Length: 249
Image (cartoon, rainbow, N blue to C red; front, side, top):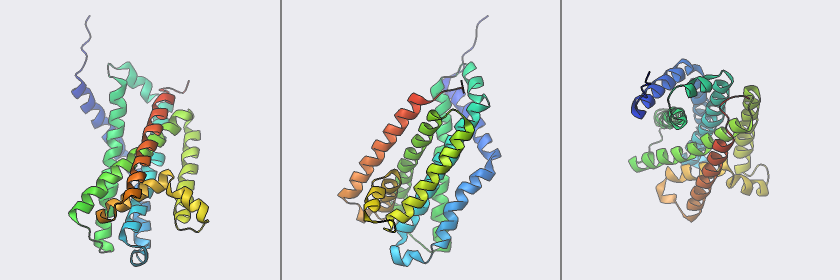
């Protein structure tokens, strides 16, 4: 009896449809991911005049990207692995690569949604207006920064097999990135830590997003930050793929 293997395009379409439906059913977590940067954006309205709109917008976008990669993607991988979802998918005649591509596509859609929401709220509530080029380059920078955090989330899910441990680890890393990143960047934790934060994953992503929102400010240091961001992404993705296990055994 012959087995009909579905085309890659049909298999990917089915996976995407399933993953987007699952994301929609978990829309409360989606709302929470979007809500945090929006609240920070509105509450930091007074800082726009002092630090400039690129600083405020890039901080909010970076915080949102961190939440998507760590609190969203990493925990979803660990939860589905713990429930045996990946084991059932691997029984089907579907390449493993398509399973991950579908998951990543959903997260990329989340990155686009997050960036768009921040831009809209900034326009409507803070009256921040950027040039069309700034919106496009800012969106591109957010995608690059989001890839870094997705790679980091993949690596954490690969390091830890237990879903609860992954959840605890991502919460800790998220807290450290946000608290140390924000206060360290402002120099509140000392000049030495400020330099460390600047070249950390948080700092490099924020740097390229801020520069992309004001393209005239792009300089050699920003280019270095872009190179470091891409290097972080490649390392995290490589280790995440290498260490990832499809089951908890």
